[in-house]
Length: 441
Picture 1 (cartoon, rainbow, N blue to C red):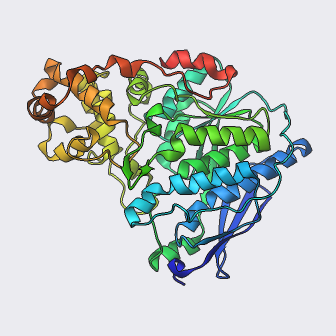
Picture 2 (picture 1 turned 120 degrees about the horizontal axis):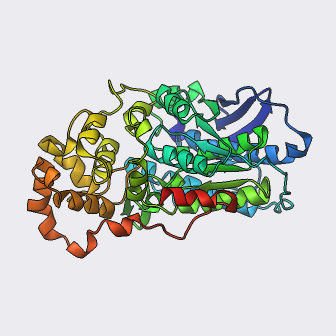
Picture 3 (picture 1 turned 30 degrees about the vertical axis):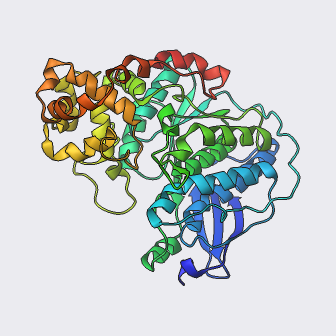
């Protein structure tokens, strides 16, 4: 079967039993694709949470379907009609969450994605009296560790949670000292076979999928909040193409956070909060906070090559070649003693002329921002400018090149570091967790 030639994408069924959620999809009348989510040591679901759990499971079925829909992008989405709020959420997720996929594949999804709607909104979700504790997703990088330590600083009860089987993430989670919850997501093997046969392929909004998995876990295990560590820079588009914003991090951005937060309050539980604890902060502000967390320096990694499903992984925690390595190195440099930073990476990335193109992209100099979870071009330029003013960095090849070639083209008034260290007002952090914000700033 060539999924590119199919006419419909069907949401077949979603079920849950004995700690395993099964999500089934199909193109036309072809072979089913069944994904399984495994919740370890799953407790019995209290009767008063059944309606909330079923609603969250239904949303997970819709949201996780994005991984399979993109293989064919058929003209019809076949699912029972949805209420307006649910359909709006799915339309936005598939359109904006797949914008990078569409851009790279030369597709235009505008006007093609339309989830059927027409049923009435459900009655308002009740207060379930969920235990006042937080699931904190761990990604292995600096951001989630800053969020963990902020919650610990206010004595908050929390669990480090992650989806998948990354040893690096497991090691970071263990280092936090928190209880741990490792959920397994098993993609349908049919999808990999379709990819081999020439299906459309590319980036999907995986943070959205993990967000709903953890919302489901919150109902199952009993937590009143899921607190991600997505910074405000995640809301900035990577580029604009033919009138559409293309943001690699769309499902980490504030627009998605607000939509999912509102949906959970109205459809699942009035007392289940979904937020990003780091939303008020820039990447540079978060990196400054992480620079104080020295016990994690030998455990964390933001290098995405560590988290590939397929393909080679770096021999150590940092490949030193990818945009994430470049950005974390640059962002940490103004706040971390140089010898310590070099010991983390095992090399000086800013004294390697072969890395010039990678850093140029971060600076948005002769290139657009990389399709990666990195900060805004303006904050990268502020970090590089700060280094250009410090004697210990000035002679390094790429800092000297910045001073010589790039800085004369920039307005010095836009290069100050300090404005990036100030929190913004926009966030969804619930009142119970707001004191933790002080530990970050």
